[in-house]
Structures are given as C-alpha cells and as structure tokens.
Image (cartoon, rainbow, N blue to C red; front, side, top):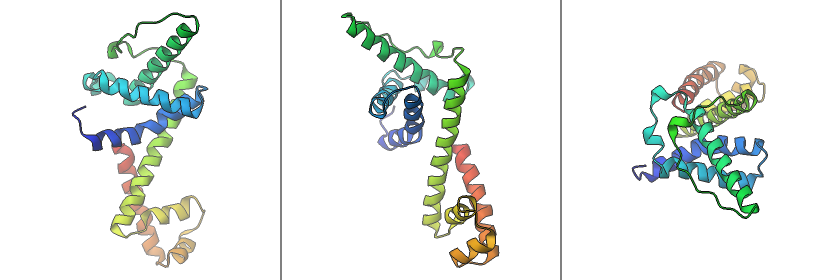
Length: 183
C-alpha cells in the first residue's frame, strides 16, 4: 500500500493462484476467476483493508477467503441486479464483519489449495536458491521424491557421491521448511 511495486508483485504472485483456484472450484470459468481475483486484490489495496488487519485477528488465509467471498458475493449481486434492470450501491468492505461461520467443505478445499500454493512457492524458492548457489538441492529432492530414486540412483544421475546427495536432501528439506514457514 506504500507504493512498493516489488512488494505488490510478490504479494500477488504468492496469493493469486490460491484465490483463482478457489474461484474456479466455486464454478467460475478461469478467465472470470482471474477477473474476480483482480477485484479481490483491488479491494485489499484500495480500501486499505490490509493495514487494518492485525495478527491477533486470526489466520491470514481465513481473512483472504472471507474477502474473496465478499467480493464474489458483491459482484454476483450486482450482476443479478443488472439483469433485473436495477442497480446496487457498492458498500465498502468492513474487515470487522469478515469473520463468519463459513461452510466447512469449501473452507477445507481452500485450506488444501492454500497448502498446495505454499508448497509451490517454497519449491520455486528452493529451485532459485539451488541455482544461485550452484548446489542441486532441488534436483536431488525431485529425483528422490518425484522420480522415486533411492540415494544411490540419485547420486549416479547427479554424478555426485551418495553422501553428497544425502546432504543435499537434508539441507534442501531445511530450506524448504523455512520457505514454507515464511510464506
């Protein structure tokens, strides 16, 4: 909100995929979900909602899903009203009324998407860090976790010793856990 473009891009890059996926799972086509996600971020920035939210208010993902539901609900109301020939007044978003009972199934789906997005962001950071250091943390973890290689096979594919691969995986896990916590 202070105008830091890099921070805005990082914020959107981190949270946009989870918001879009949530909206698609609510039945919106992908292009419409992208538009609604953009509206969600506009509400967060224009109404200074983020500056009025503190850590004591609860989990950020609960807050973000509440804002997304609020924006989606307002847009759907506007569309229904327009179809009937009426117009609705746009009411500013009030962060004090965002917490509601919610429905467990959709909250669980959003939580699942949230975790997947956190892992995706963390894995990308690990890949970047691996490249920066010239150390194959990400590739060693991929070989073992995705390709099902044992340490010996991963070592052969990486042309490293088995001990090196064990170290890469150990350090990669530590870095990945830290990135997930940060995200």
